[in-house]
Image (tube, rainbow, N blue to C red):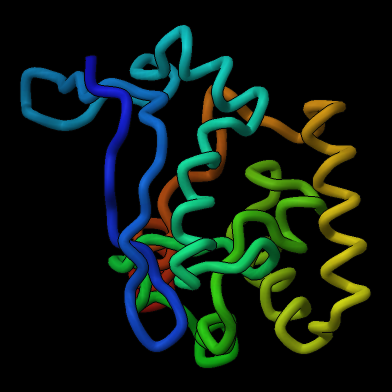
Length: 171
């Protein structure tokens, strides 16, 4: 059974090779497109996501110093062209296992709000702020607050920003 996958994420100045537990399978439709996340999410994937244990292998990245315990969550490299200049500042610090956006709504936030929380974190980074986020994370994990095991978010950042860009051209 395929339980681990590796992918590239944005990090400080360079990309981070990240390891995660696989919570979804790779089933595709007849056109070769991945099926919706809600269909591909398997039984143990629901448990991993509900308990946030799918993030556990990222501790290896923290040990390697590619990531920090607290910081903006690393995002896929194909999102880079779609960041605003201000959003790019989230790459001035190490990405984190948890972050300000995660304790303020996780995937229940739209992309603009999530990225705004990342910017706010970078601007206000401090030891006490990190401690606050760590304690809030512990509470969220035990309460299983704002966990979307079915990955019901607004979609991919690149697709959303591209669609907005095309709408602006029409107007």
